[in-house]
Amino acid sequence: MGMRILALLLACAAPAMAQELAAARPLAMVEDPTLRLGDIFDGAGPRAGLAIGVSPAPGQRLVLEVPQLMALARQHGLGWRPLSPHERVVVQRPGRPIPREAIEAALRRQLVPLGMDTEAELDLGAMLLPMVPPAAPLELGTEAVSFDPGSGRFGATLVVMAEGMAMHRLRLTGRAAPTLLAVVANRRLATGEIIAAGDVRSIRLRADRVRAGTAERADQVIGRQLHRPLAAEAPVLAADLGAPAVVEKNALVTMLLEAPGLSLSVQGRALEAAPRGGLVPVMNLASRVVVEGEVVGPGRVRVAMGAAPLRP
Image 1: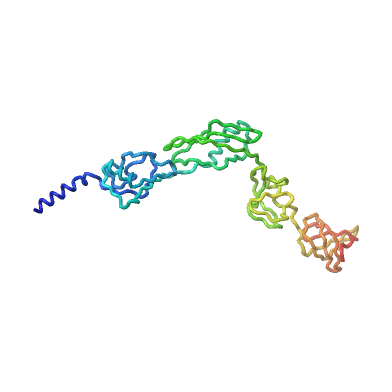
Image 2: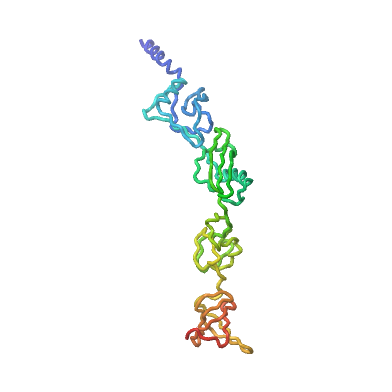
């Protein structure tokens, strides 16, 4: 009796043993353009390398629900049953974005011979670009390129080629905007700061964003003093700069009174800040009289003999 039961169990198990016992992968990361059975099921055995379709495009994903998984398992003899009616496999293929710099370089190679300024800024707007396989060399080409020197408008078909993906063609349109050199602040600068070499840099900005009087070269502003605060990345205007003050407001100074054959010095207080060569009101601390003098050096103000008092 026992032998008959054992034989019956073996006979019932025979069809199942002919199948590979498999488990569906919840998340399948694939890099090959061909989707294989082993990407979807663990335990696919010698059938794992069978091609079952096309992988998603780089950077995209594919979702296989229970009916599709059941059909694949039956077709390839896998012993798989869903654990729930909501079981699924997400097939995801990694991808890398196409660098914007590479697109601009491909366009410039064609637009400059058509009359575009080599320093123009390309305004491409929003672009919906395909991704490419992470390790595949990227090749970009252009077709049907047009350019209007008067308006700066251009158009071109971008051709995207990389191993492991289909060739893509994408129509691009935009405008080449002229640019100008401008000095901008590397950090926030406060009123009264004297600009040092590391505080600024010269870059190109769109011409419509550059105000008249903007400094073009760093050497035009280094060593100058700011008359107003400046935000980081803000352009530096010549009107906001002046010679650095060598006499500060309310600082004690030496007043030099000079006349032919006579030279006197008294202590005073500067009532304003001023650079070398600038005029500054200064108070004689002995007489409390305020006169105007010329700054001739740090802490030194020359006053003409007989200068009229500005106020007592």
